[in-house]
Length: 283
Image (cartoon, rainbow, N blue to C red; front, side, top):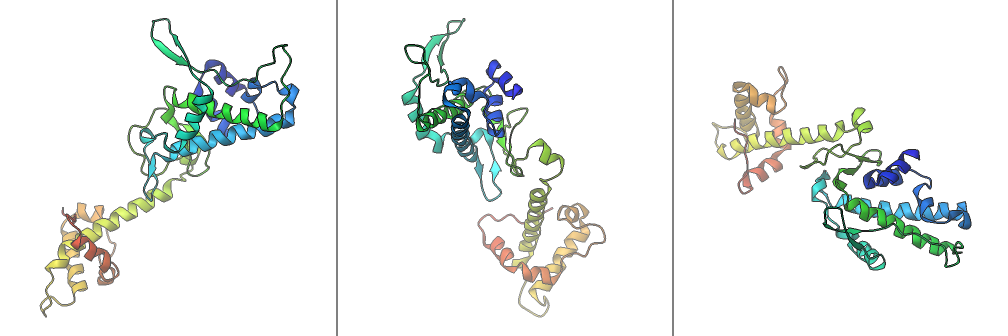
C-alpha cells in the first residue's frame, strides 16, 4: 500500500492503476472521500465498485489490441472503442480546466472527483448508492489519467494468471505468442502456445511441399498411387536438402514423409493447391 501511495504522490498514473487493479483492499479511494463519516464497510463496498469499473474499462481497452484465434496482441493498436460512451459521459460531468504551464503552453487539467464537505465544513451524509456512484466516477478518472499518461500502452494483462503488469518499454510491434507477466514467463508457461505455433508452421510448410508435387502426379501405371508418389517426391527433396529437412522439423534419423501422412492431409494439400497465390515450399 505504501508503494501505491508513493505513486499517487508522484502522479504516476500507470503505477496507480496497476496498484488498484492488482490489490484487493481500499487505499487511494480513502483520499477521495470522508470515509470516517461513511464507515469502513460502506467504503470497502464502494471501492469494489471503483475497481470493477476500472477493470472493465482497462480490459475492454486492452482487448481492442487483440485479434485472431491466437489472440495476438498489438498494444499500440488499442483504441477507446467500447469504452467511448462511458468516458464521454464522464467528461460531461467533469469538465477539464484549461491553464498554462511555465513555458506558456496550453494544458488541460483534471482533478479527481472529491466529495467535499458542505458549506459549513461538515462531512456530507450520503447513502450507499451515492457513494458507489462516486466510486465509479473515481475509477473512470484513473482510466482517463492512464490514457493521458506518457506510456499507457505499457499496461498489459497476463494470459496465464490474469494479473496486470507493465512492460519496461512500450511494445512497438505485435506480440504473437501470448502476453505473459515476468513470473509466468519465468516458469515457461508460454511454452505451450509457442510449441503449438511452431507445430502449425511446420505442418503448413509440409503441406506446401506436398502441394508442389500433388498436381504433377498422373493417373497411369508408371506413377502408381498418388499418395505414395507424392511422399516419394517429398522425401527425395528432403534427403537432398538438409536445411529444408530441418526447417520442416525432421531430425537426423527421423522417418520422413509416409503415404499415410499424405492421405491424412489430402484435404489441406488440395486446398493449398487450389488457393489463389498459394505458397508452396521451395528451397
